[in-house]
Image (cartoon, rainbow, N blue to C red; front, side, top):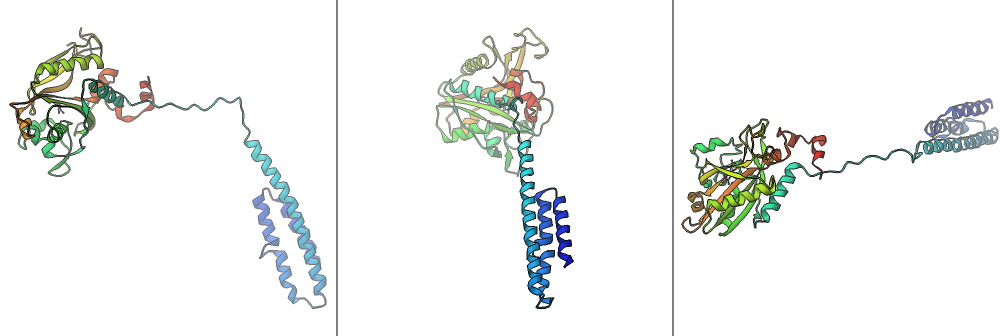
Length: 339
Ligand code: DAH
């Protein structure tokens, strides 16, 4: 039987050439597997004459054992080699500098929002958050801005249906609060608002902070006193405010509020376009019609309201010149706002 010797040689050569345990396993299967060459010899036994069978069987078994031993030895060797290679690759170099982990920081809009909440809570305001999807009534009609009112054009509205829209102003929250609560009312309503507007100082989504105070005997002086306090805490101890006449359908009288320019101290610079003042928010005395719409008697109660853009305050406070920086989330920009 020359065949078995040849097989032994062939298998040994192929096994020794195997580079890794996977290749070695394949060679092993080629000879000793269920359909392997040695197994085929055993299966062919029945074709051999009965008297020659025992001798043949012995030889094939010896061949199989020899091969099994050979494979086992090679397997051991390859596994050892593979382990050494793996361990070498896992070497820890304790002299390598560590990986830098970047610490997060609060977004400037969040910082300003938190600061506003902190500042106004100190004056007794409570936070109320209204829905971002509003209906036309809360966003406009109840705020004395019925369907044909020209003031609707002051804001480019995203309508979802004839009735529902993405709120254009947190002022909608004033109505919700007055419907739920009887005066005295002193609330602050922060949140996202949406308008079809897009340039260096306008973004289709931005944040506003609304304030509403309703009680007996509230006057415009109360509004200005509170705004002075706000400007000092938000911008600088020496900040001043001034009121300019304006128009909003839900306030009468309405004012635009300017704060003295913190960059030049009011002398006039490029930020304030030489005027010494920067416009920061809209405000006014709550219109009688709005109080009536909410079941509050305007002869008994009066109130003031104000609304400001949080991005605008953040841009002024931190000297940011493009509103897009606030939504792009570039970490090189954001990480400048760590304390
Ligand atoms: N809602 C106004 C706007 O988005 C801002 C505003 C003005 C709010 C006057 C007020 C207010 O509460 O009294 O332009």
